[in-house]
Length: 143
Image 1: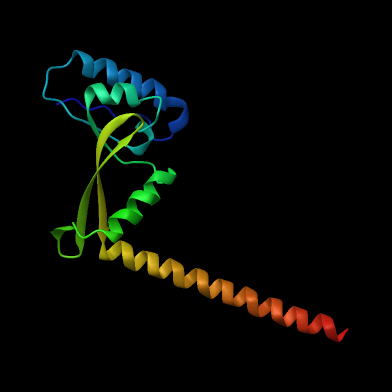
Image 2: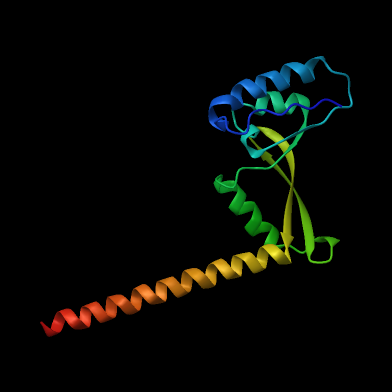
């Protein structure tokens, strides 16, 4: 097993390419079986050709439009598997960056509760802004 940690203060964008090249070179020389586990930053179109050769486990950047589409599709599906109490997952097969991939969409009760709390906070803030706007509009019409 090989592992390397880089300076956490370094910019991911600046050093990711160098790190990826070092990983690809090391993996190309190492014996199989091997597994590359990486952060979402490694999952890019530029790295796809290398990742297709090596195989890896990585998060997919939530900023990709495809991610929300796959999550929506999974939420409509019925192929969920229980991981533990309150956590389930659904495997999804798709082609991304020109290579066949298997994604796992994970859903948890804790994540649902965090999302509901965020939504309630946003709705409360919107309600306060709306109320302030109505008051302002009312006061302005009296002048």
